[in-house]
Length: 292
Image (cartoon, rainbow, N blue to C red):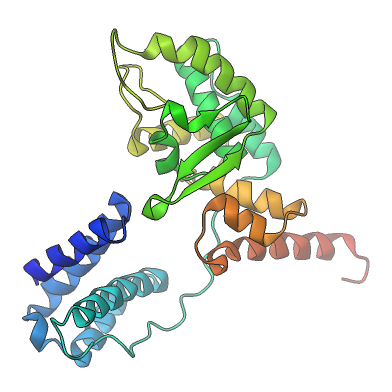
């Protein structure tokens, strides 16, 4: 399936414009399937796909992971059928079963404040980190969108930034006054000091060496500050994005608005945050109501 996988990944890149991380995830899932089945694509049957699902369950993969891997297979075989490489789609009528409701981890407002106040803003590095955290929480953008954002993507006069999401889809997101305040000084004072001489680096956020920030480096940064702040929850890169969405819904924002801000193509993806809100409301009710 090597050639077929490369053809499909090329389609994801050229036709759909999917982000590199998404392409890599598809490729990993398809290669794992290829390693297990070891057949020419034209000889793969529905039973092969079902056997692969059973293999994943026996290996202890989470239901959500199995569902994602099946989704990758479905997309792949649907493409190969549509392009005429296959006559029958072997994965067409297969379902992964329930994925369960896996709720994302979020910070409460006090924990967000603790995290934001941890960087030492008297240093260039600390001020940059505080600015990145403020922007993430103010906008709910993905970490990949943050680290890849060019300076031109920020308009402080009009108080918004432009994020490029999955499939290179563009969306405009308003900036709060805290984020604007930190961005103004970062752009005027801190970033020029981080730039190397005559550097043409376009990324908004830079490392101490003057190059663009990476997702991996930012993950290390947020974990470090979480530890220093005494936050016991696991601080994954998207935790401020999840907190942003949950806090908006907690305070009365409608689901469609949150969907647009997050850049979700399907509102069902955004609805996961209503589970968190409902869970919190239930806990408050049970604690506060005398006959709960």
